[in-house]
Image (cartoon, rainbow, N blue to C red; front, side, top):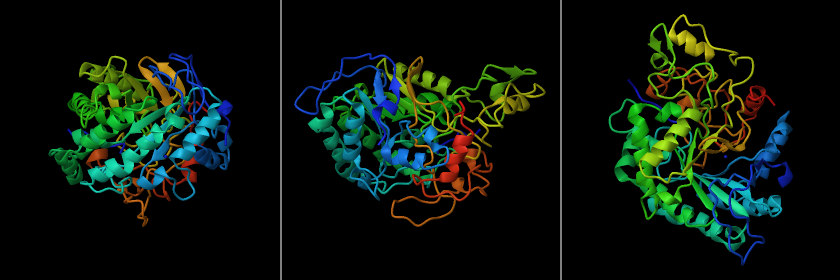
Length: 455
């Protein structure tokens, strides 16, 4: 049975999210010449979270967008040029300066997505990167080192900022699921496993960034519909451990994991559990669950966090869940369980996630905004976050020439009939989508319309 799946960017701080009670030492005041605050167990607790003015302005310009334009979202550093800013977009220093302004002296989280590995996104094309499979030295010296140098500047390192870094989406799980003769394997992923540059790159990033006193590294760990099967679960934890101890890094430089980054898997399926059965047939045998151990992101994140502890990570390692696009509200949201005529009718009738297949990841039709960002919402979970800025495309629905290294992936084409990673189903993608990371108004409107909780 195939094992899938890949997935597969001027408001006042008062309008930003305020999260929980402070759990650590109070932040140092001032920009330089003073010691940074001691690291806290959960960087989101007692902190505001930075609102990206670039994204906020685009969201506010959309009909109805002002309802969410004050929410914090991730800042994507997805190519070398993004460090200094591209095409009118702010660079890293500009974001950090604005975050200091928004903070008004209070602890403030800045969420960065560090995303430019050599041979990036080996199981898809829409978010391929600028660096070739062997360009690990360029990744280190021209991408990670400059980011680390900026974050180490006294103005930022000795401030009230807490820098959360999401490290290399989709990289390490691909080494488990899309290599070694599996039906989902790709030559590109086999290459990256053989040359070790995903592991080296992630380890280098963790080591360099984790050495900065106010940086909190969260490593991408896929999502339940990718890593939740028995043959993927522990294997992925082991690969994360390998990366966390590569290139001079240690597990102590990992604050936690992030799951569901830029994906659509439901936070909590309330109408069925993995332990249910219908007429003697377990839910795990349904076509949707397909023998997975998990049916939603919350249960998966909590279990995978514990698995990391089991393989040697600190007992207080945390987890983030990206809820930017997994609300699945609107008129299609089931109000209760499906009929118990058979297991597929039961699961399909009750599941909130309305995708055609759980392996579909690109600009999904019918998706909605999920839970608003929030600190410490559940046991083991540091925060619900919007690491993927709602309204930024997953990939173009047709081939678009570009200088960003981004290819055309048929999973973003609404006419595509699929591949082994989505069970050879239709892609479920919206039409007329731009390049990944570019603004997609139609998708933003879809997310507003189908938000759950409703706006």
